[in-house]
Length: 279
Length: 279
Image (cartoon, rainbow over the protein chains, first blue to last red):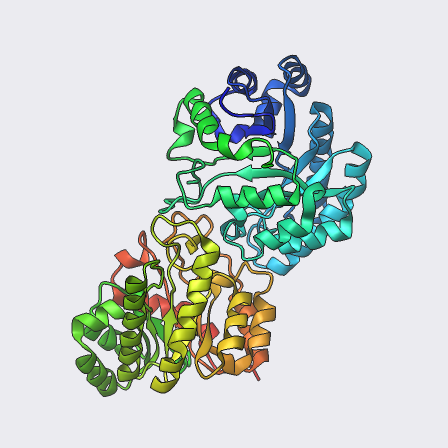
């Protein structure tokens, strides 16, 4: 093996043509022992079968993706979303995922009150925090790119996520940092350094394409404009020792390809940025 | 006329099927006396003919769009970009535009050094500032949505723009605020209030569509998720008295329509948000 892949994981959404067992076998066959699990594949295969298969393959889990949205304005519907997230935390604990990646929902349907949605996100995280602590699963707070504010998550600022973690505590919450979402942010480097090695739960790799054709047109590492060497350098200086996780949403390219090819290219492209710390 | 359109302007890019004289006549015919001029139409018609036509039609100019990019790494090419911006400032002065909207370029071709591009933007603005002051034309600093960081402008944070204006001064620079670019930003309201009525040069209206199909799929006011009533409310409280300017990039919809129809709908949709201050 040309590269040390010990810390490398692939997020299942990168290879959506593969079912859960196919992904476990496929990543493992290529020397990748880390996986970020996506809920639809987990539900299809089942928690017990997934757990056993992961164990048999010697795999480790970087995260469970993603939380249920929390963007209902009616009390009963909101409570159902909170309950759904408790069940997702249970699933994460069952498969040995150290965190659930929290994608908190954009604006409620027919509602334009962004400030209220951000209060709702805060309150939902505070309500879920004790359950997460009791379950030994962290709420992985991932700032999403501002272009997803309307319909996926109104948690878009790494600086605001810092404030949430400061308030809710490191036992309940952690930072899920994705270069695709944060690369543009003048505060990105500063906030990574402020977070420090222990608060960064997992680190997502994905490139920003120029041109970007639609909002699900993310790129393979090396195909875009993000400076991975520099950003990996920051993480080395910080002393980060967690996973590097490739996550690509790509309707027009990677999702159409043979996953075997995607995994092979992923290793070539990510290999230089997932190895041991620089000495 | 149902609405008071005194402060309303249309940005020419909203009706690209119209040439400069067609836009002047078309807006004016519909009771809109404000225009944001786009350079390609200005160059086609010429500065002198444009100035005379604007004067004859009783129009006022909200801004000249846009600056030349400043994203060259070689000294001679960089200097050419600075010189091009001086000529654009001259054009703005000639047509009575109070500002040039500064779209500063994304990453240089083949270069991933985002921090260096931001230094380049800073230095270019500092170099242009004395010329802008001498010309009586402000450098209108417009934070662009983070999704344009790679290829249009690496000036993406309204908070960073505040810092630039603080440094370069209110004689040279001003804030061009566009709800489309900034609506998601948790700092948007705070930074508008901090800027205050005199620092906000012009205020752009455009809606965020859900779903957004590509990076040139901006929406007519009312078709998306932005809370215009609330944001106009902030501006009222601040005491802002400048223009409200409709600017829509829309490859798949508005750019394909008859501009006469676009202008008619624009008045209906923007009318409630461009009138006199609330008492």
